[in-house]
Image 1 (spheres, rainbow, N blue to C red):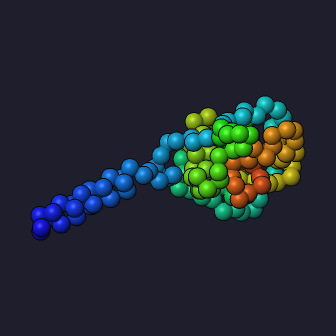
Image 2 (image 1 turned 60 degrees about the vertical axis):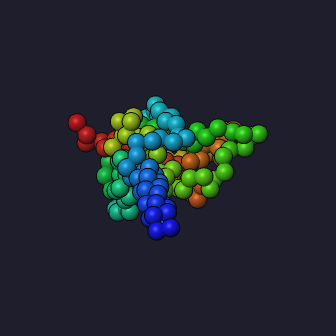
Image 3 (image 1 turned 90 degrees about the vertical axis):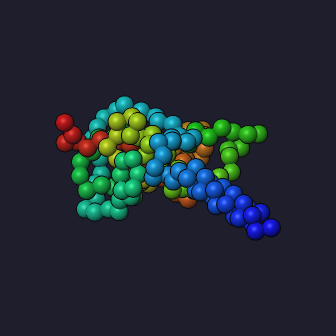
Length: 158
């Protein structure tokens, strides 16, 4: 009887360890999930900046939660590329916005970006045409944010 309890306990601990080790966090994976990269070709004007912003630094590239305080060039958009089932996207509860943002950062890094901007700045949306045309809602990556994720390179990058 004692051996069976020990065996069950040991099996339970092993299964727990395998489960925890098998579940990579968004910060340690290179997955791009259901994201796609849309390259930007166009005028590199003076993109808007801010005096300060919050930055999520635990991803493959920093994610600026607003406009950055330095000059940059836009290289593309990171958009949702989830498959559709019966005309609908996958349920939003399958992935957290943190996982979606981590996947977007991995996608941006794979295309040579130095960072991403999570922004709803009207001048950026207008310049990129991000809220125009069919399927706009389906291209939105974050479920709790109506803006876009823009892949950028620093202007002073050599």
